[in-house]
Length: 284
Image (cartoon, rainbow, N blue to C red; front, top):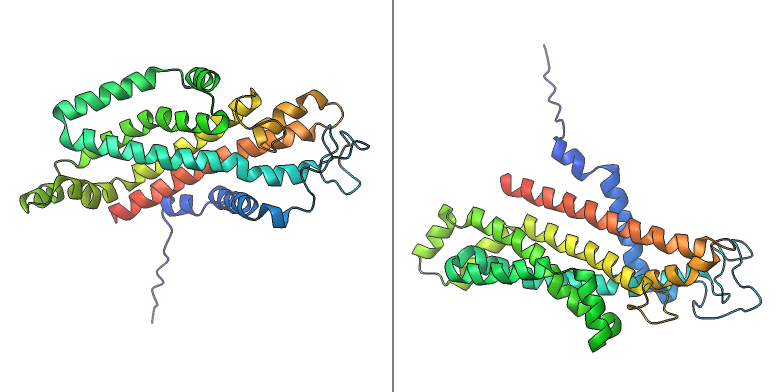
């Protein structure tokens, strides 16, 4: 008597979704979210308390990453600065995605003159040097950090609009869209109820790319002195304030730089993993 044993081997896409890299990025995201939401309760030090008798101290004496030039605990400021560093990019991601989805769906579905007008506007914005435009805008109009956020929402939309329009064009003439049209459904309902769910992998990828671009862009502006205000524990601001004291305590500049890179890479990897997972779910 023989017994057949069936062994299920996970597909490459499954292995990719549950890879150690992806799980590591999920863990990083959870930790950063906890720091952003619960920072005041998790922080063992007041990030704004100065100790002028202990400036630029190396790690030790109760300070895991040492102190900055004003004697403030670097780890405490990193935890406190997580919210300042991530709130702006999240706002850009939400606002930019809403704009990209609206313009991309309209351009891909309606076509004709609507598509021509939208894509000419997109091409114009896409050709503009984003960082230079933001610097000029903030310098002339003001608004500081949130002025830069508003401009990033506008300037991040063109890339997402192109991606979403391309995805809509691939779905536009499929049977389910034509069936909805033949039933007399309104065009806004077709776009929102039928097209949008079927291009969700592209929407997720576009949104997280906008988050990464905003994180790097806002940190760069803070490094240049045009983003977060002086004294803020925002990561880009910490980087520029501590770069002159690398010899005394390099962690003041290295730690925020590492966090910017890790947060950006985690969002990129998660975006790819989630998009792949959604695409596989649609295929199944």
